[in-house]
Amino acid sequence: MTIVFSSSPSIISRYLRREFLRFFFLCLVLFLGLSLLIDFFDRLDEFIKFGAPASTVFRYLLFKAPLFITQAAPAAALTGSLLSLGLLARHRELLALKTCGVSPWQIARPLLLSASILSVGVLAWNEFVVPYSFHKSRYINTVEIKQKAFRGLFHERGFWYHGENVFYHIDRFDSHRNMLFGLTIYLLDGNFHVRSLVEISEAYWQEGQWHFENVQERSLSSEQHDLSVNQPEGNWLQETPEDFALVDMEAEELSFQELRAHIANLQRKGLDTIEYQVDLQLKGAVPAATLVMTLLGIALAIPGARQFTLPTALGFALAGGFGYWIILALTVSLGHSGVLSPLPATWSANCATLLLGVFLLLGID
Image (cartoon, rainbow, N blue to C red; front, top):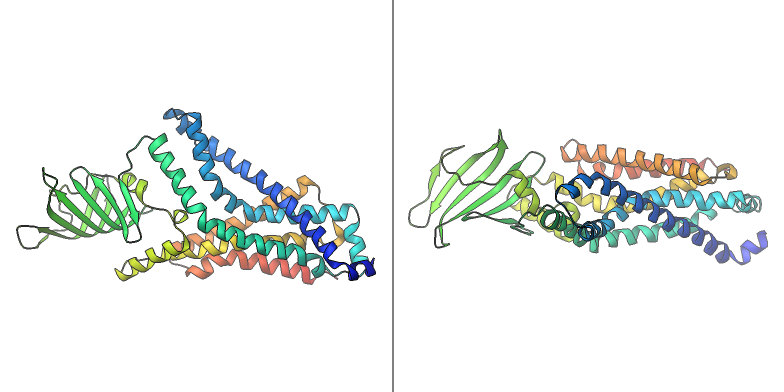
């Protein structure tokens, strides 16, 4: 067996890669189906309430699927490595390789190489497919299902919104705190001409109405004059935070370059960008989780040539996946609040999983 392995390592490597990739894609389809099923039943009341046609619901789920693929890839990698090595252990192939002097690292190498390629693939998928598809799913949910007018246009310098005889340009909308930053209001007359501009540094929603800070109004026929803070008689902003949330782009709808350009524009205007910086780092951290989860699965499967049945492998995958996402959600929340800087906020879960996997592998004889 040693001679065979030495003379034909590529045969064994190809076999290990094939088994891992086979189970990876099977698990990816399984987890994707579960995610779509959960999302469907979570929104079922909404679909029924608005009388959404089955074809529209199908299209919504179809365009939502690419995001779920990105999120499910780490769990699929963990499960795929556990099942593929568990199958080898069940047929005593893993034990035979170890007996013939094949080290755990030699067994792990083909799987880690495949996982590295998958991570790059998920990164490219998240960059070129997810932004468009997720934006399309939000559009279908907003316009075709909820039947609300889509009156906004987003670009890297903020977004525009068309109200009743008014246009808004907003640098940033904080949906968590219902705050608008860098708000410019273009007031129109009956002939659709701009009669005045209102510039507001901050607007926040409280007790069912908007409150303003640092307000200035400029008329086309008069010089600029300052207005008092929280001035109620202006009635400049009739829309609610929900209206702006419909057109404000989420981080998943922007590519890495688009999000970075948006951050640079906000920084030039002196606005806080910590949340966007965390979201920018997530675009690299989540795809990399496919690799570190594969390493963890290898470390769990190789010791003792354990035989992992499907329920056991799924149990490990669910526990590992939930543990990873719980840590990631906690650190990302701390990052969004400014307690942690973007790098530790997004990469701590990956680093913890990587260290655990390496520690377990180093303990194998």
